[in-house]
Length: 361
Ligand code: SF4
Image 1: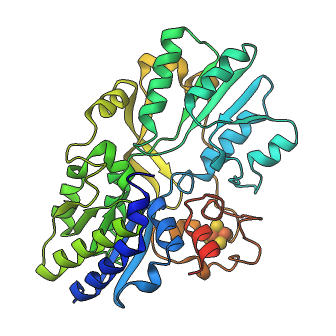
Image 2: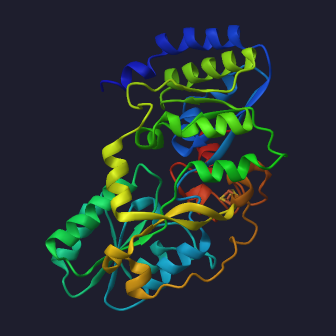
């Protein structure tokens, strides 16, 4: 596939790996922010190939993993009501709430749950089920939000009444600010998320680089992309620089995608949001503007979030903060496996625990 396969080519990756070893001269700790990066790094065995002293720390960029237990509980409570139908992305289906139950269990007990590939599919379900309220849990970062904004606009234009979005949308720079304020984490560099950056642009990380004196590089997701980004980070560290560079120029522009930004801003506004493991972070989420409240599940269904704890024994919160690695969890590989997940980091295809378990630490 053009723009993918050539960046997976070992004939391209091997010289980049050698260059990284030649360039690396000072130890540094880099957080790979995005769950897709985490999975790619594990799948390609990159951890074991990197220079000793280049430490990778997985960050809070798996959208399913950072959805709080309170939000999952609220989705489960909606699913139990009559005349409600949940249309959602498949990753959410098996995420347990605070009681350990998930929508997969609820579905087995008769709750109406449809897995969709796009929010527009959920709108089609609303058209074909006029006697039910279709609730779409909006989970994701800036990459996902423009499509959901477009769907709300389409629902409004078509006068579809039985469609709502339960927005738990999150935006990326604020949780990084919250994490970087923690002196224990000691991060020197960020591998900035490629997908999110296509929307917000590489320039979004300039305040982080300047405030926290971080080397920042936006990277793509194939082996060659990640190695190229690591070389650029190592060069910055060697020179004592802290600036933002873009190693993913085939997808990311400095200013991002203005049209997608405008689409999101027309429908959503910044709100405080609860993150799993990180708690409430000011202005780190997106709520639906009052002009479109007819499509806001919180308003239409009167959703009240009830504070909820992590599943007992689960360390997802610490893992999402980069403070622990999965083998530190007493449930890892015993009670908690991809087949019997206890926490979202083992459920999600981008979760750090799933990556460790599937590909080895
Ligand atoms: S191994 Fe399972 S229980 Fe432990 S932190 Fe990961 S997801 Fe949570």
